[in-house]
Length: 362
Image 1 (cartoon, rainbow, N blue to C red):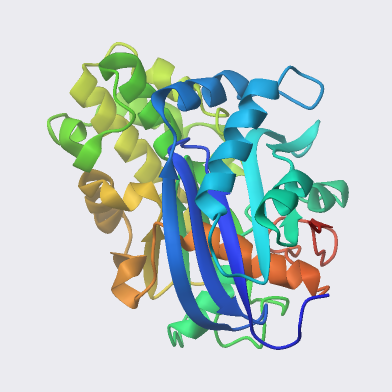
Image 2 (cartoon, rainbow, N blue to C red):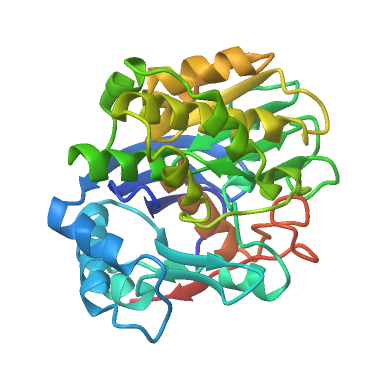
């Protein structure tokens, strides 16, 4: 049983960009953030990343033993040695079809609980999908707490530029994340995943460091316009994407030079966010960017041009953009342990407030 009041929670996240595992501590009661603690990053090796890439798109029942071993080992290394009361383990998303076969995050929370000697909350998304939700994004309830923590008084947005882009619009004047009008969240479109795939395919590199390649290129308007014709951008949120739902992006830039392809893909990610902003209940006073995309100056410059508000990395308000999602699953673990909801109709489209997650003890 989790003690009352503030507790120290450990969270871990391995995103669809397949760069590695983030692990981070926060002190929280599941509603407020008291403080942030230590963190650690455990990168995947090239061989581990190749194994995980080979498992993308697979479902329970497929041969996933090698991928599971990579995930368990990397998470155990990333999460060991922290002083925590509880841990949140997201696992690795391999497939996501909320209107079809569901959602699949590979990982064994029970085995991890035994390895860490801690209660572990895991499988956060399945119950949301069973109740008609998208199962994603799941960070918005944490984003609401972050908006309160930084003292925001006007609506703000948190933009995660990971493998897929997702946006959370927050009204911090509301009493809690469950309140009507407090949150709107959805996936904006692809972000780093297709750009990383391009870099791997053409240059043998995991990503475009500092946007160096994109900066040398020109945006090709024809490819960008075809991208924005996708029906996804007309769908009303909440809505979510699988990592490879926009694999057509690679086809659209197939005939372009490496530099022009990278620049055009950055423009695609930024334009998807711009289109997504049209769905917000009111314009946010600022957009705070987290995830790997905030390290790409080309993508950030394009966002600043496209959006009519302040666009800054979350570090501008004292948050850690490398660890925000890991911290989110630490926060959500406490909410699950205390029977609090982790998603709502306005964040995932679920029919009613739901608290997702299994709890495994050592």
